[in-house]
Each structure stands twice: as C-alpha cells, then as structure tokens.
Amino acid sequence: MGDIVQLDELTINKIAAGEVIERPANVVKELVENSLDAGATSVLVEIKKGGKSLIRIQDNGKGMPEDDMELSIERHATSKIRKIEDLENTYTMGFRGEALASICAISKLTIISRTKDSDYANKIIASAGDILSREETGGKQGTTIIVEDLFFNTPVRYKFLKQDFTEARFIKEWIEKTALVNPEVSFKLIIDGKNVFYSSGNGKIEDIIYTIYGKEIQENIVKVDYELEGIKVKGVVGNTRIAKDTRKDQIIYLNKRNIRNAVLTSSADQAFKGATGIGKYGFFILNLEMSADNYDVNVHPTKQEVRFNDENKIYKVFYHAIKDALLSSQFLGNNEKEEKKEYVENEYAFLTNHFTDKKADDISEQIKEEKSNYTLPKADDLIKREEKRNIDYKYLGILFRTYIIIEIGDELYLMDQHAAHERLLYEQIKANYKDNLSNNIQMRLVPEILSLSHKEMEFIKENIELFKTIGFVIEPFGQNSVKINGIPNLEYKTDTKQIFLDVLDEMLTGQRSNLKDVEERFIATVACKAAVKAHMDLKEQEVHDLIKGLLSLQNPYTCPHGRPTTIKISKDEIIKKIKNS
Image 1 (cartoon, rainbow, N blue to C red):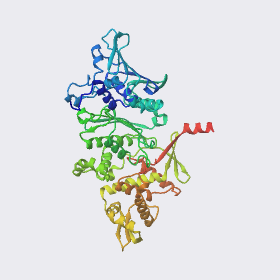
Image 2 (image 1 turned 90 degrees about the horizontal axis):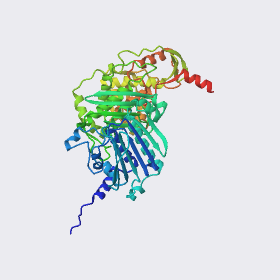
Image 3 (image 1 turned 60 degrees about the vertical axis):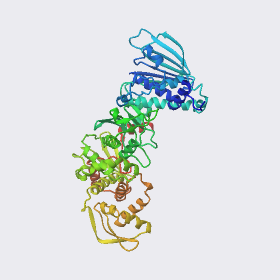
Image 4 (image 1 turned 135 degrees about the vertical axis):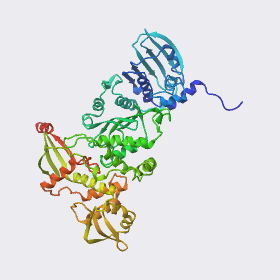
C-alpha cells in the first residue's frame, strides 16, 4: 500500500478553516458579510470573551429556506455563483462557500432562520461538522447564527489567540469599518454585555465618523463623489488640517469590500503630496465602484488582496478623486466651486512623467505613452482660478512678526507669511518649470563665483539641466567652483549666493523633505529658501498682495511641505476661552 491517503471531510474542513478563520474577528466578518448579502438593514453582533466563548449574529435579512440550512454548512455550497464565469459578475461579499463549513468544523454552531413566506423559523445545531439536531421554532424574519467554543477541537489554533480584549478590539475595528461603507445599515455591537458601538443606519457617513473619530475629524472631512471612465469613487477625505502618523485611517473599499492594494496606496500618497506634513499621511475612507470584470478578488480566501486588470487606470482615477476633493475645501471662509479638471490633469501629467521610484515607474509606463501625444494648456494659466475668490476681509496686523491677522465675519484667520509666500512661489516656479520658459531668468550684471566641495560639484554636474530649467544660469568655473550668471526671476529676500547655497544644502540632505520626486523636491526647496521668513517685516501693501495672490490660486491651502497657510479661530472659541479663563 502506498503512503498517500485521502483525508476525511472533517480534517479537510479544519485545514480550510486555518485559512478562512484565523481568529474570532474572521468569524464575525464572514457572518456579517452573509447578513449584508441577504439584504439586512439591521445587524446585531454580540460576543463574549473576545469571541472565544460566544459570537452571536442576528440580522433582518431575507432568511434561509429550510432546505438550504443543512446544505449551507457543507463545503463549497453557496447561493452566490453557479459556474466559474459567474465570478466576473459577482458583487456579493462571499461566494466561495467555505465560511460556514469552516466555522462549523471548529465550533458548536446554531443557525435559526426564517423567510418572509414561512410561518415559523427553522433551527439546526451542529458541532465539528456534524448536525446534532433539527427543529422548528419561533423567530422573526432573518437569520441568527450562534458560534460557541471556537477552536475547541483545534487547541493549537486556540493557543495562538490574543487576550480577550485584544480579540474584541479586532472585532470592533472591523465592525466600524463595515459600518462606514454601509451607512444605510444599522449596526450594534455588544461586548460582554456592554453596548460598545451603534450606528443608526440613517445613511449619513458623517454621523458614523463622529462616533468613531470624534468631532474634530468630522468637521474637517470633505465629501468625495467622483466618476471617471466608468469607475466611481465615493466617501470622504480629510482636508489639509488632518494628518496622521500612520496609515491606519486610510481605508479602501472595492464595491464595499475592505481591501489592500499597493497601487491605490501609492496613488493616494501622490495625491496628498504637499497637503500633509513631513512623515504624515492623509485621512480617507473611500469606496471604489466598478464592474466585477475589472478586477480579481479571488486571490486569497480572506478576499482582502485584489488585482486590477488596468492598474494605470485605477491609479489615475483614485488620484483624481482625492486631489479634486482636497482642492474643493473652503479657503478663508470661501468655498466657491470652480472647475478644477485641467489643473488636476496638469498636476497628474507632471507627476506621472517625473517618477523616480521604480515601482511608480512600472505603474506609469502606459500613462507616459498616453501623455506624450497630449498637449496641456500652459501651466501658468492653470495654477490660478478663472475668477479670484471674493473675500471681504479686514487686515488687523501681524502677530509675532510672523502671522498675518485678518478678520472675516465672526472669524479670525492667522496666515503664516512664510508658508503663504512659499506656496505662491512654488506654484510660479513649477509653472515655469513645466513650460520650460527661457525668459524666467534674472541675469546678473556681475556673475558670482562660488567655491564648492567635491560632493556639491558632483551633485551640480549630475543635475545641471534641472538647475537651468528652474532658472539658475550656472556653469563650472575651474575644478570645484561655479559661476552664477542668472537666477530665477522672483522677488528674493536674500542674496543670490545664499539662496543658491541653501538650495544646494537642502538637496544634499534631502531627508528633511518628504517629497520623493527630485524635481518636485527641488522646486519646493527653491520656493522655501526664497520665501519671506518669520520675523521679516512686511509692509501693508505686501500683505495685501500676498493675500490677493493666495486667493487667486487653485491650491492655496498649504505650503509644499504640508504646513497650513492659514488657521481659523471662531468668535465662539474666543468667547468660550475668555469665559473659562
């Protein structure tokens, strides 16, 4: 007799459970997704001891007929698909037919279900894959599933579970994520007898965000409702005032299924570039809606990994959706809507033609080819709005020789003079760089000669064209010296030599900047070094010119490194502060 034998059904299901059910949170996920697939508008989740001793899911969905209940705990039994071709048109959360069979193999499972056409509910009890009893019982329309003693017959798996509160936290986080993308469904979570989460199902994502993240986040989100090339992106992004230390609050869904995808994460990073501080990440909760034949979610049993047929297209749509939303935030109390498509397209074209990261290069190859035959309007025409924002403000003065104070209605605004001027210069320099303008140069009457280190000279030789396109007219002058014949045509507040040396120093120690792309970082550095600094005195007319310049920009919100150009203080905040002092 040979060494190969066929495993029995219970062993097969236990092995399958190891992939599908790693912890109690996976049980909750699979069962709640079944509730959503059944059309439930109300889902109650109750757990005890982190889900190890009890998980109860109760919904008001369509319920299961009596004949389907026993079949539902058989492996690869599903109502979602009939043949492999159906995967291209499947939008349900589950379709493999593995979840209930896997759960039943490693727990005591009770299912109670009633359809609208039935006069009573049916109940089955199973354990370790075997049905122990069947009976008729009372109950409302919908399904209740009770899972007890999880992993009772797989002690190795049970041993690796975390403490109860940790397992409960995983479940709570998953329920919250699911509620965010299903605001029309009411969710209730009970942990060890305590109500810990509730959503009303009123369809308002803002209310759920308030419950989960608090008032500050809720007040600083921007709605996203974007569509391009047959793909919709809906949800919210945090405005430029919200920045996080981790990606924990970057949540992506695909047809309401929570997913992970490196292409989408990279696209979001580029869209938020310059809108968040160094080392920070933007906040977003976004759902992509597209036809099922555009992607493959059947990569892993957890269905979190997904592959797209056209990654370039997905990258572009996600970028545009986020960027468009960020640029629609109000500025100095004004949120007049304006068409931003050309500006965002111009930014995207610049971005995708200047990748330095190898992964990004792979993603953008097709995009580069498409853009090579596409002529955009002149960049200088796109950085400004068609009509300047109409703001009736009162200039009050400058605080700490750094913050310009203006009054608008019942609100005070503090404008960071350096960040504001830096944004203005950045947009101007980048526009000139994009258009490769040769007249953006202020020639020196007397060239300056600078002696440099060997490392500095090597950097200049490698990037001489970049210096020239920005507006620096330089040439090697001896072994370790350069001659500066011209500088970018901007109103500098420091001398030519210092600007050049500051930019060179910053580029050689680029760790200070979070801008990955060399061109982008170079432009941001020139703008930063050339902008007015804190404690530099501005004349009143210079202040008005600065405000006027920002009001005319499509993107006035932050400096290129993510620092806000303005902050708001309301009259109510001031009164409250005075009363409490």
